[in-house]
Image (cartoon, rainbow over all chains, first blue to last red; front, side):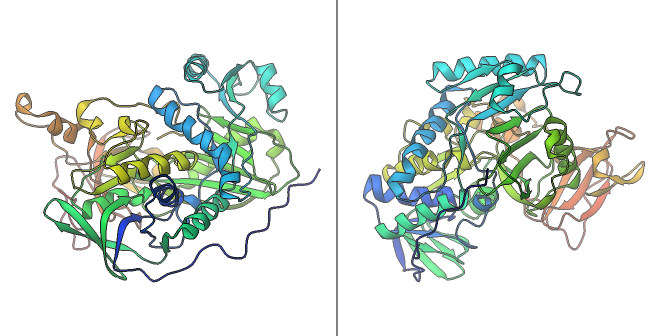
Length: 406
Length: 99
C-alpha cells in the first residue's frame, strides 16, 4: 500500500487585480465561506460585480488550519437541514468546479464512552434518519469492522461502548477546495483582492455604503462579512455587536505513514478526532482553549490530553511523531450554531459564529449567504440562524453534535 | 501555558484554574422592566476585545475562590490579577473593555 499522490494544479488559478472604486457587493474574508459566497452570488443570482477582500492571503486563515472533516449528523432539524444541504453540494462540487479536491466519503464515526454518550448517540441517529441523513448506530464489534486499528478493549479508562456512523461523511483537501472556488469565481469576473484589510465602514445614516481599507475606500451596494474569528472585531467597526467569543482551536499532524486509518474517528468524551490525510499524515484536533484569544496558538496541555486520548484509542499511533501544530481562531456563539443573516445596519450582512465547524458547511454557507445578500432576505435554510434568535430565545443548541468542546 | 497569579495562593499554572468569561458584568437592576433585547444583552452578549480584557478565573484545584484577571487576548500577557471586591486596575498599557 502506498499513499495517494496529490493531483496536479492548473497553472493559472486567479488574477490579482487592483481594487476598483466600487462594486455591487463586497465580501470581507477570502476564506472558504467568502469564496463560496462570491461563487454562488455569480452562479445563482447573476451578480458578478463583486470583490472579495482579504487582509492576508487567500484561504490563509481558518481555511488553512482546519481538520477538513465534512459530515451532517447534527441533532436539530435546522442544523441537519443546512449541513445535509452542504453535504449534497459537496457531492457535486468537484465535477461542477472541474477540480479534484480529493473529497473522500470514507465515513465519520462518533464514539460513545458512557451510558449518556450511548443514549445521546442513539437519539441523534434517530433524529438524523427522520431528517433523511444517513446514520447508523454501531455496537463495538461493528465499530471494529469500520476501524480495525481502534482499541476496543474493555480495560481502557473509557471503553468504547459503540458509536454513531455516517457513511457519506468524510474529508476533502481544504486548500484545494478554496483554490477551486477561487478559480471559478475569478473566471466569472469576481475580483479577489489579497493584502486588503478592512479598517472601517462608510455609512450613510443606518446604511452601509462601502468600506475603508488599507488600499483606499471602496464603495459597495452591499457588504457581507465572512471573517470567522475576527467577526466581532469587524462588526463592531460597523456599530454592530455580535454574541460571539473568539477562542484558539489547535490541530496537529504527524509525519507521513502508510495508510492505516480508513475512516474519521471523533470522540467527544476523551476528546480527540483523527483522520489520515491522502498523503499519509495523521490529522488530529482537540477542543478549544477555554479562554478568549486571538494568538493563533493554543495551550500545550490541550495537546497533551488529546495525544493521551489518541494513544489510548489507537495504540498503533504510540510511536508516531508530531510534525507540526498550529492554531486558528474560532468565533463561538452561545448555542454553538452559526449566525447568517441581516444586521441592524442596512445592507450589511453577517456570516459568522461557525465556531469549530465551519469547513464542512462551506458550500451551504456560501449558497445561503449569497441568497441573503442578493435578495435582502434569508433563504429558508438560514432563516433560523438569524441574529434575532438570541432575543426571541429560539436557540439551536448544538453543543452535543458540534463534537468539539466549546 | 499561562502563568496566573491567584490573589490568595500566588502564581500557578493555567491548568489549576477554571475560566469564567468576562468580568464586571453586573446583574441588571429593575429586571421587571427589561425588554427581550436587554435580557439578551445581559445573558448572551459579552465583549470580545483584541487586547486587554478583564475576565474571571477560579482557582479550582487550589483555594477554589473566584477572582479577576486583566489579560491581553493577543499577547496572552497576564497584566494583573485582583480580588472581586477590588476595582479594575488602571494600567497605562490597558485600554478599557468595550463598555
